[in-house]
Length: 195
Image 1 (cartoon, rainbow, N blue to C red):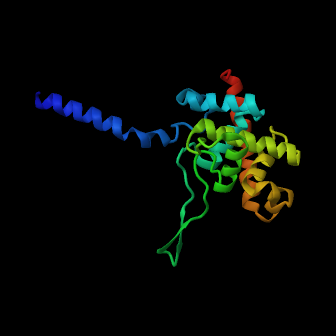
Image 2 (cartoon, helix red, strand yellow):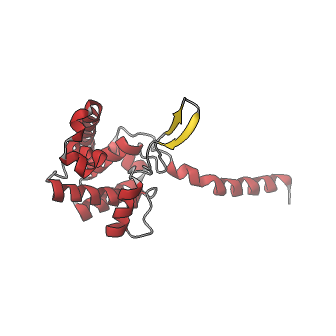
Image 3 (spheres, rainbow, N blue to C red):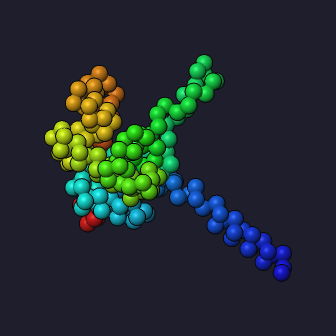
């Protein structure tokens, strides 16, 4: 076998082995819902399936995922450090597209998702978000179209939302308003491109 052919085979093999990490990369254009849907049709399909199952609009899901993980499948919270150098672990157990915490994800797996559900799989992450937002509507009366209030309940937990813990966090109130604005933009863009 020639050296050139061996090099080509080796490169092909290495490329097929190293492709896993790329699956978690963010789409190129996060500011355009239509471009995002075209670049990652599997994301859009997962969100449509969640909308059919749970009634949570695609644009609300998109805006929440944008805020939580910027569509990075293996996103994690940053590490904490004591004295700036001693590692103390991560800020929380949040992981994946939805940034679901361990305990909430386990509750979802027991009630809805099954044992095989994974936070770094877009279909499972969007189904989790649909389940969570549906339960927030049932328990707290929050409309599934209200990205602002849904985000506050998602971030603070339903008990925190009911206790209005977000009122002591002006930064969070501003983030929730930004989620609502992005949701509205995504909705308008999806209408224009017919999705």
